[in-house]
Length: 622
Image 1 (cartoon, helix red, strand yellow):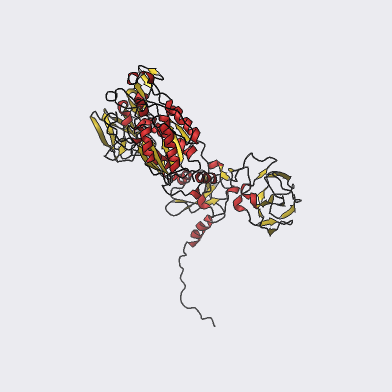
Image 2 (cartoon, rainbow, N blue to C red):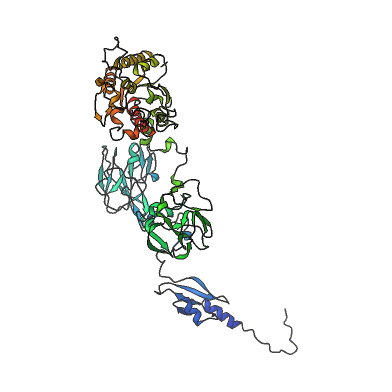
């Protein structure tokens, strides 16, 4: 295309200052910062209005620095500039790619003595002589185990075979197989080996150990690794530092209160009338209530337990409501020592109906009812449960006098617990064992009268029968008599004869029943209540202790018939010192006779009876 001639006048035009703009940008990318500062404040001081050049701000040691650039209004921190390395503890978990760092590459990892990790084994496989895996249902193969010692000891092995690898886990060599079973075997590793793997016999895999060195621990130790540097020191974690801690409605902990001390403006002072609480965690700006307040005083503290303000009142009231300051997180409270056992501090404006003891619980450590199944338990505990006798389908019949009859009855007017329901030994059997218990006791009956009850009772499908008497036999001075030959004639007008007849009547009705003879508890009568020939045994303060006739007779009969025997006379702790506290007959209405237990002593009786039932009578129950 031909060039056309230019006509007219060419005039000069001003040039844009683009060169200075390009120069400023080149200064920012010319391979380095213009100046170096030891702090951001030093940079701002020198260039408060910014600069076109990048600047370097280093740490105090000058080891690492960051590029700073001016964004038009402020200096902004940029990337790390030619750092010497990553500072210790400067990488957060958020900077890591998932799975890129394992526990084994971190410092501060503590390992157990057993280096065999069951979770990483290759199952149903064995090592070949070249390090390859072959199928074998009798063995598993360990993971690659890093070498830290030239000696390795293993626990029981049917045979021993290991393969050794270099630092890149490439095959080096294998050991000569050991084909003889052994409880322990120690072998050396090649000097060039960095890793090894070993065959493990499956039948003993669950408690197999691989240990560096020439000795095994005395008992099985599982494999573990943990970040020891990050574990809290022993006894250093309090309940307050755990999640989901539930505190009782009462926030006042009597056990940590300092008696003889009070708090005033955040400081402890001596005061014999008060006990000051420990720091109580509270919520800011909330309402709280305390029990009995007289010259009430408390101190509030912030998050750092620094004193804020005081709470005081001169009112004497049964309860006092107050609001916490908006920045208060802790409280110390003065509790009157005279009311310490019933003192409470609660959130809100209502106190519980009755006193609640301070306590803390950790929700996630307490299994909810019905959530723990038998399969969740350790094997030994499952076995123990399997061997616990099952009483739920067992039926027990109890024959006896008023001490048997009283269970479930209101105490009579002659008893110090008159009107209160008696909790006899049968109630405790039902609660503790879960058995069905039929009460065939009769108040005022002697053994001869109990014999008649036995003869009229159906014992079909009954598992256990208990038989006892003695209190009324002694009061009525029934002759003791003698134990006769089994299946002979018995003098049923005597205690021994009636008891022997009752035993045989029970066994004739149900020969497989488990029969328990119970020796009666002691009783205490005025010596004047008995004729001269019955004034036998210990006498203290004109009181006579029931003689051991009944114990001796029932023990002989238990031996003669192979029955079980429970000794309430000697094993329940009744004696001259405590019988007025345990036998609660009103002496003014019973001619000073002490025969019938109160509920406290019935519980002691039940302990002995239940022990006999659980550990001897019910040992074969399944």
